[in-house]
Length: 386
Ligand code: TMP
Image 1 (spheres, helix red, strand yellow):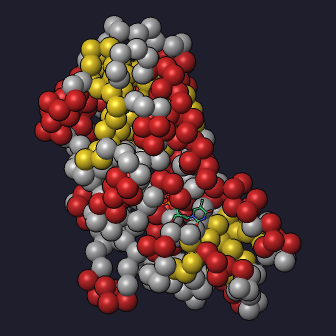
Image 2 (cartoon, helix red, strand yellow; image 1 turned 30 degrees about the horizontal axis):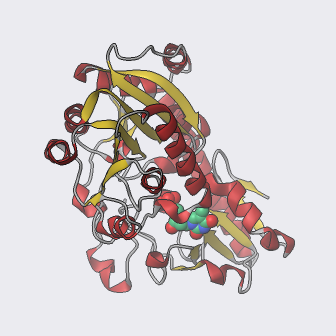
């Protein structure tokens, strides 16, 4: 499998990096993880092309999360909010506007530069104990540590939790938000599985990760982003009263068998069935001479395209709004990526919706495509044509 975000130019084809993509569940900590994780500096570097602000829905989500952080956890004194994996500053911008002290820690220069240009204090480093110690030296301990869609990107999880332990004040709160394994499983959202997502968390695995460090999860909230995520609110043991939602969710995870070998095997069979159905549909439509364009050069699409064997014969090109991806080719299959403006010039007959997690936003934006007779092909939780 190539790296999900390694969109490349023709001269890079010969040196493209591939690795073995396999996920497994640990029987002791119930954590689902990628077995052979690629080196992190191959994934998060100066040209990292994912910008949090690229979706309006995500902008609204971050505005709401910032409000919750400010209202519930930043009261009194002169609080400090630290975001781990702060990307282009979409969340911290709201914190900064509220006049709250903040530090974003972000290793990828491309996105960190955008945050810095927005006036967000951004440290361009991988978050670890030495960064935590430097923040404490410079600004004191943090009242809130936020990490959205970031912990799942980390290979050495215990080092990050140790760093959080070093950084967080005695009564501080950690807010973690990541794609939720039980949702990935129940929706057969197999394309969430790619190199950058080293871990697929559930409450049980978050508890087993944080508890040995003296933390407890005191609340959980499902959030409808990234195809189904969970927000975990975590504090030092004994500093807050846990919500009854926490044991209820832990029970539910066991009841649905979210970590059972049989559930994982059934998931794998469903994925293969989706692949066979999707390829059959694409081939059938292409035989009829129709044009199929991919919609959204997403990281997830790299798994779908390469695991199922989708080629440029089936999907002509992929439209995308991120300028850094324009004129590149998709990882592995080398399907051209072109600006979104070209989607309507002229509209294709079919659009394969790689951005299925933004389906509502996309359909609302692309009503003219449907009115022109265009049809959407989707494949999570199953293959569909509308
Ligand atoms: P991701 O799934 O890896 O986060 O990538 C999302 C990509 O989709 C990103 O390059 C921006 C692009 N995009 C569109 O092209 N149109 C849209 O409406 C949205 C929301 C995203």
